[in-house]
Image 1: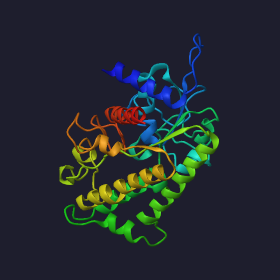
Image 2: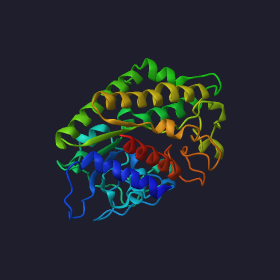
Image 3: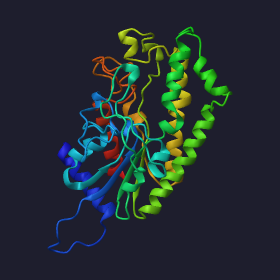
Image 4: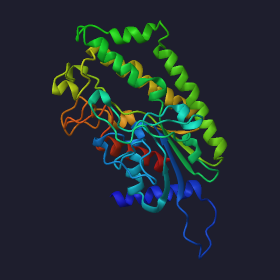
Length: 328
């Protein structure tokens, strides 16, 4: 079944990108040029998403893993694509199109994890991987421009001294703002602006490109009471001391709205959209072992994960991306 599906996707891509008549004894068709841009949710970044992919010249600190969805499709689709995977953990939208980035690898002093390669040298804007002949660009980013990690960390801090069942200090803090703290609406407005600018910058660089925007997976359940609270082993595999009302707010007012902004910008700028949230619903960080496609602060072995998809989550995003390409 998988080989048949791969063959069908390849045929669709031929129709998308190669409409010219093929001579009777044409040379073998060159692979489609695909540039994968994104942050850690694209790169893989964590051990639960596979081993780190070797980089010519040594590690660059971007932490691209073999189980990430671009690498899954590289292996799955064989010679259909010539993939340039320039995704990088920690990347903002600006790092994708107009700012260099200084990656940190897996340097996590908070978890007593020290990357021997840290500090790493700067990497150029990911848009540099897009050329006039690029056929396909996928984008998996926006969370770092929003400041999702900052918001999550604040929820853990504020929730540690709150009533886990009734209090919502994090939602209050980022809804009202003040003291120079951008509100959720401020953050979403910035993502919206820069996402649109990114898509247009890609199209200016590759006039015949197909752009695919990929949303974020479902990391928090609809029923937040299924998550363990606290610093127990189970709590650390979920969201530690984020209160239940704040988790519900993070799901509805942050993650779902962030995905809505990405989908809206994709539609406005004539890009395709992959609904990774729908593709992973019911497999969030609070699900039982093996059912979870996202890890919490720690993975199920006790290793650091910092709320990222595992290899199973990346497989499902790869499936969803492949399906969108096949339908278009």
